[in-house]
Length: 69
Image (cartoon, rainbow, N blue to C red; front, side, top):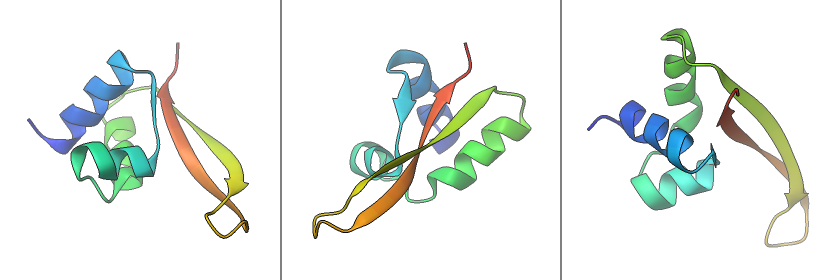
C-alpha cells in the first residue's frame, strides 16, 4: 500500500488527519505533499488550519485535512 493509499483510507475511515498523526501512525513525514498529490488526482480534500500552543506554551498552527462531504 502506498502512502497516498494509506492517507486516503485514513480520511475515509477516520475523517481527518494531521501531520503528527501521519508521522506517528504511518511514518509519513511529508503529509502536505501527499495531500497535494491526492488533490491533483481529483480527491476533494479540505485543509483547515488549527491554532494552538506547542509544548512550551508558544502559539503555533498546523494543518488538518479531511474529505469534502
